[in-house]
Length: 70
Image 1 (cartoon, rainbow, N blue to C red):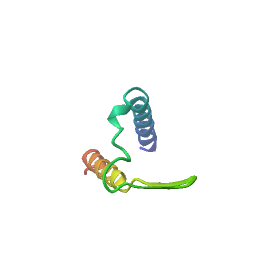
Image 2: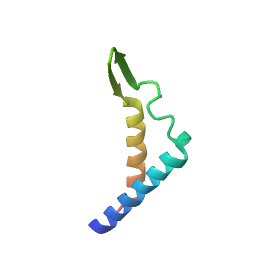
Image 3: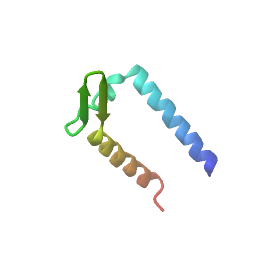
Image 4: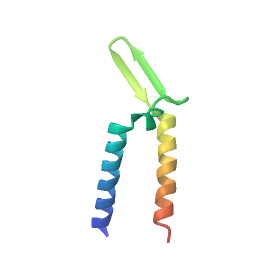
């Protein structure tokens, strides 16, 4: 069971890497949504993608519930 999960995670990471490399417009929304906090002062910057992380969490929760429902 653990081996299948690790293989699935590996395939998902490869797919995410390919999307970021060859189709960056698919993830260009990340970090630019209302509610994402970006504070820049002088030479320092604080970036907190709050809304983006909530959306990613909801999508991952839906996917996990669809595949691992008993």
